View 1 (cartoon, rainbow, N blue to C red):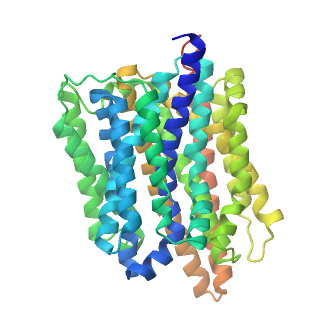
View 2: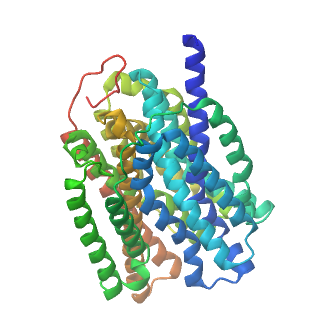
View 3: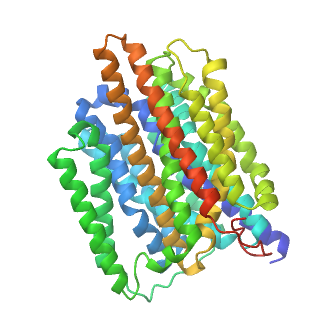
Length: 477
């Protein structure tokens, strides 16, 4: 096979991997728009309805590390195909669901399959693209899907729910999933697994259980109370299991998470920065959507359109700008600058008003956040994955995805608590509901800006410089 054919095959493989990951990213947000319709149709109570989201988050967050390591052991192509097939089948079950139980169980299966696809897709890209410049461009495209897919999900969800029904937010995955399966079987490279090694069963069970307990405690913390016996007990149990997991990994012959990875300075720093940035991004996406709907009166479709300028900017970065910036300046300073832009955008959102106009109170923050996300996501992935050995790419990918997941879940819970507490205080002092909500959202945006600023400072101060070698990943400068 000549060089030009191999080049075209790699980029077709990237498109397939991005399509597979886009289904996963969309499903984390597309369902939010459809929740009122699902509740009315299937008779969910308010507390029961949360499980349509939580069932997905629990299994997705719990299985990221395991999914990445399984790809290392048994072959990433095999795991990717299995994950996409399971996700497609679960989407069909969600779309055809006529009972609460079926929908919640199918959502849980979607979460497991989504975790496998997300972890394996990132490690496959690192394997497919060995040249520094090519890898930078490829990670830019993948980064746009990962960063922009959530806000695209709101737009897609609004269109499908308004034009058809809530069932179609799931059924739309079927043709995409089938297409990905057909093309992936032909294009993605096989092999790559080290299946002769035994799976670290004890480590897999402890870390998966610990992560699921932590996600459950976090997503229900506002409702149950952060100092309630249930929340404290769940978080304490999760912490104990994580301690046991680390002890198991230190002695395991083939650990699910090789602890030596954390001796890679850039990977460790990138994961801390990733937690802070994910918390900030969730502040932007979810809190901004709440403000637009509950205070400014936007419809779900209008909310999606409001995020469109940021998505266009992120797309422009992913299709070339980000790669050029990284090849010129390395990864450290673009990452720090992108997070600083995100902090500035959230700071602008912290000045929203009850009757703010889109062009003066929403658009400027959206533009800055689009620039920030577009500039930072590519170098973030490159820094986090660049130093890992090929045989450990899946484990590194699982760690990266878990950091983002846990950072986003914890950040959203903290920011929702802050916003709710501030809103309640303002209501008690006599403010109107719209003004009280706005006051809560403003404080949440400000804290989110501090998260992003802290991430920018850590990236600038702690990421180590490294030379860019031909055929090697671009590391921090």
